[in-house]
Picture 1: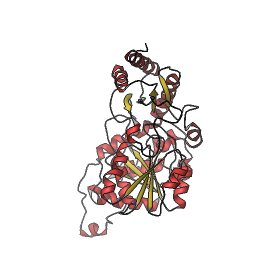
Picture 2: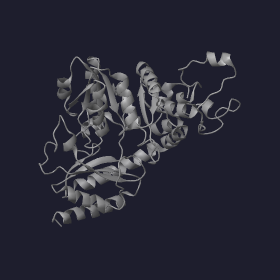
Picture 3: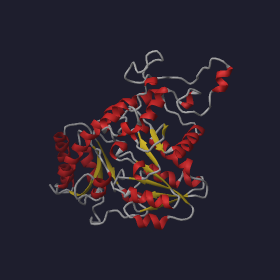
Picture 4: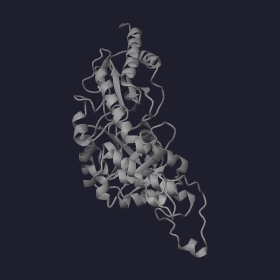
Length: 413
């Protein structure tokens, strides 16, 4: 493309196909751009022609050979592709996992004595980081209600240096008013960080909405095949440079083979997200009408909490949502999940296969209530679904079987 403006004007599917395919990385000096995909460059050592060449090479320049830990064309192509998909980003740092990306970002931004504000619906490993790793480094973590701007403002203090957001929350799916929160943070000199794994930049342009750093677990949608782990953080120039230096200092490096798998997944991510979103919405609508279900937690669903914000700010969705059973016991919920034949039982999400896991938010809430407002006290046992690429009708039939087992277990059949 002739310019970044031209690239950003393209549709998401086109950008996903073109991103990161610099001619220098998809061919040879004699035949640049001769192949479709960047080659897999496996190298720990980069050789120099002589001492003058060694001394002339900057140690920390993007896209230049130096040492294997600094990456090679395969990793550079992936990082550049992710940067191109995130409007407003100057660069992207790759990490071995999504959790490593969160840790790497927070260890870059925070210092001993600082306060981190964390949304109360955050991913459990993020919460554990606040209670453990960051505390050990002298950082205090405070939680706030994800749906209440006043709760965020009340938690702020002069030592607050960073806020970690997650929208929608990966268990209970609350949608936050990210533009308002990012603006409030910036006005106070607070760095805003968003775990944007649910929507990806294709569904939510985080930096364009005011966020300072956008994190993704590439393990989910970008990989799309449940066979590779990686994380990323994209930011503007100043923060990107700081993230890169800290990541190198911590020894963060990703395999070129894994980077190649991520690039492969990236090319079809838009199509997979479209299919999974359509299937998830149909299943959510079906569940909403079931007598066994107290609440469907799916921001794409009209009338669901957060739908208006989702409709205003997002350009896409995904296959991840939850539902809450009407009363019952943990054992009955286990029986429901065990009865499912097309849903695997396992952590993670965003792959081609459907998954189901239990959701118990009460034990990981600090600043907001569970059950949610409007739900009965006994409506507390949830199930999270990651909808894959199976036929929607088959998944609904499988869930119907599971719900009938739940009803029989509860004596409601």
